[in-house]
Image (cartoon, rainbow, N blue to C red; front, side, top):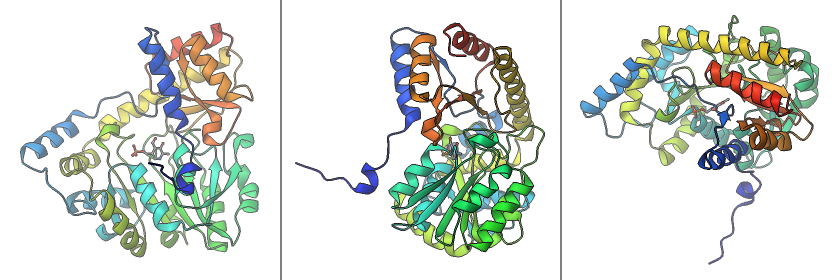
Length: 382
Ligand code: PLP
C-alpha cells in the first residue's frame, strides 16, 4: 500500500526537543549521567491539594464525558482568574482543552486558512510554526535576538513585518524560549499595529504566573484589543501539571463557536476529574506557586552568576524558566556536541527560529545546574 501524506504535514519538521531527548535517553541507556537542561516542565510535584482533589473527583465517579467546553465550575474559576488579570469574559467565551497546546491548535485551525499570513516573534516556541504550517498558513518572522529578545526595541521591525495582508500575530510573554517579559510600551506597540492593520492576536500567557519582580500585562486588557485577542493559558507550568493535560482559551464568542466545533469533533472534552482538580489549582495554590517561583528566581540568579564566571553574558530573563545561551553559529552541532561530550542536554536555538543560541531550562536542582555548567566549561563549551 502506498500512502500519500498531505503537503501540510510533510512540510512540518519533527520536534527538535524530542530529537535531543531521544539522544539523551540513548546516552542514559548506556549508563551515562545526563544533566538534562532541555526540559520544558517544572521539576516540582503537583501541589498535594490538587492531587487530592483529582483523586476525590475520581472516587466520586467523575469519570464520564463532560460538556465539551468544560465543566461550568472550572469555566467559572477561569473567568475569575481572567478577571484578576483584567480580562472580562463570560463562561460562554471559554473552552477548556487537554493542555494549552491543544488550545493553540484549535485556535490556529479555526483562524488560519490556506495562504494566510501569520507573524511570529523569534525566537518562538517550536509548535507555533508547525501548527501554522499544518493549517496551511505562511509565516513571517521577526527576529528579536539582536535586542536581547525584548520586543520594545524591535517594534520597528515588527511594523515592517505587519501589513494589511497579515491575518494573525502570536505573542508569548513571558516567552519560551527566552524568558523575556514584554513591557507595557511594547504591548501597546503591538496593539497599535493590530488595530491599524486589523490583525487578530493570540496571547499565549502560559508562563504568566512565573515572573521575577515584574507584572506582565495581558494583551487583551489594552484598549482596542478585547475583540481581537484570544488568550491562551494552561495548568502545566504554574501548577506543575504537565501530565494532567489541562489548558484553555478565551476569546470573542464567534471564535468560540467555530473553534468549539473543532474541539467537540476531536477531543470531545478535557478529562472530567482533571477538570475538577483544575478548579482546586486555580483557587487554592497561591503559596505553592509562590514557593516554586521563588525557587526558579534563585536558580536563574545562580545560572546567570555561574555563566558570568565563565565570561558568558546572557539576556537575563524576567519570567518562565528558560534562558538563551549564546553559542556557535552551528547551534545544532553545539548542542549535539555538548550532549555527547559533556552529557548536558540543551535545545538548539534554530528550533525556535534563532540559530546561534541554545536554550537552557533551569527547571532542575541547583546541584544539577552547577554540575551541568561545570561540565560544559570543562569540555570547552563555555
Ligand atoms: N505555549 C508555550 C509557550 C509552551 O512553552 C508550552 C509548553 O511547553 C505550551 C504552550 C503548551 O503547554 P501544555 O500543552 O502543556 O499546556
